[in-house]
Length: 348
Image 1 (cartoon, one colour):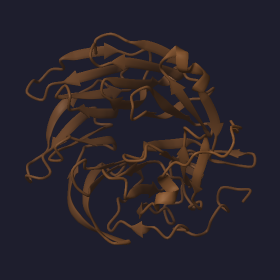
Image 2 (cartoon, helix red, strand yellow):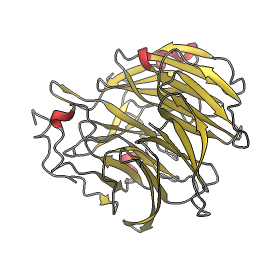
Image 3 (cartoon, one colour):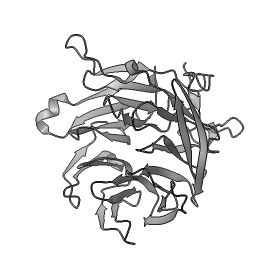
């Protein structure tokens, strides 16, 4: 397992269910409807696609439902809380609103001066928030053409997580900017990432008391907002193989058990319990990176994409063998339900 290419020749070592008719280029984001088993994927092939996921006991299948196009690669997606509408943003510097359930046409609802890297719908405020490489965060009321507020960021937006009233934005230069959305027009706190390398992903704790941060250097930080809880902060290594260190690309909390998944450029995904500081399950490595992943609304399905992430540049891209897959894993309870740790020692 010394080299990346030799990590696994098996495309699907975890025997996950393959999503039919996957994108023709790498997947940039995955998001499940909060109301039903509809999965949306955005891709570097400029498309936003939706599948219906049907579960029957221990088996799962997919049916392609619809798709829309952007003019350039799409980088991010999210659903409205009522499950009717999808938002997508990307390199065409705009966000499209797609009324998927009604079969309506996609319309542009937000604009930036550079690619849109992150977005989130905030139901408590009835606003869309978008983060861009133009170093701004913008809030949008969908009934108005212009943003209701433009928040300047210290650097380009790389990651974003929202659990109202908590919002955390990760930018270049390892800035983590915390907002209290009850007062969204001013920063609540600015934190330098506990990780020494570039921020790749963020996930707010379900109880809004802190967040996870993942970096390109195979490491995750567990950070509490309250300084009195700082003794509970820790970092841990993951997505490494000997001297080979891979990016942590995705962090997803389980919606029921509040454990979390990590996915990385080593082609693996793992399930963890931050409270007992232990790994619950390590899955087998796929033969390509996992750039993104997500749980469905009840945590019974974990979707992950397996495709080249361009982390080693064009020379490692072989168009004849490059294949994009999206897989569905049905987690067993033991994989995602936390368990108390025996004894009090903890490996950090």
